[in-house]
Image 1: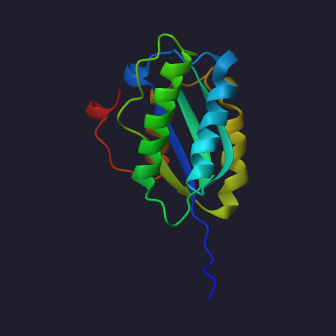
Image 2 (image 1 turned 90 degrees about the horizontal axis):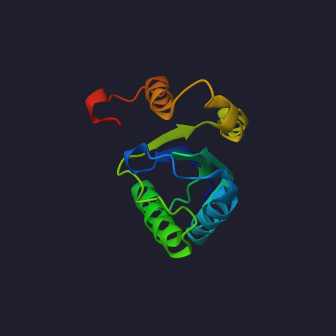
Image 3 (image 1 turned 135 degrees about the vertical axis):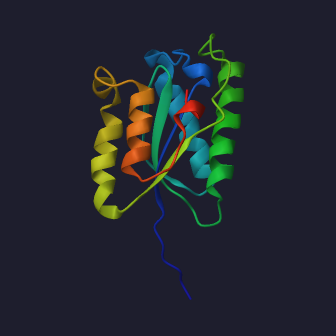
Length: 148
């Protein structure tokens, strides 16, 4: 008997202390590496993008993978890779926190376009402002004193 499912997520996380160290010239390499982590976990990447202090991922989560483990694996593996390759010399680590928001199929294309346009979007809104807005839009309770 076959099982059918779709578990769409919009993930976002930032650098430790929101350091602006992810320089655009090297981001394609980082994004390809993270795509490989997702593929190894049987997760499907729809879009990844980011700017100097954070990244966004739109993906389908395989049911055998726990969300927290996936995010941890992405952060640990990419952090190690960044340091080995020395592509962002000022990078110290990823922040401990992250955002994970479920998506319906009807929202998928809109969120993919949103992630694609990060560079233009962040000329008007900081990551902190964006993250607070995403938390509110998704009905997530939070305490601002714990946000960077």
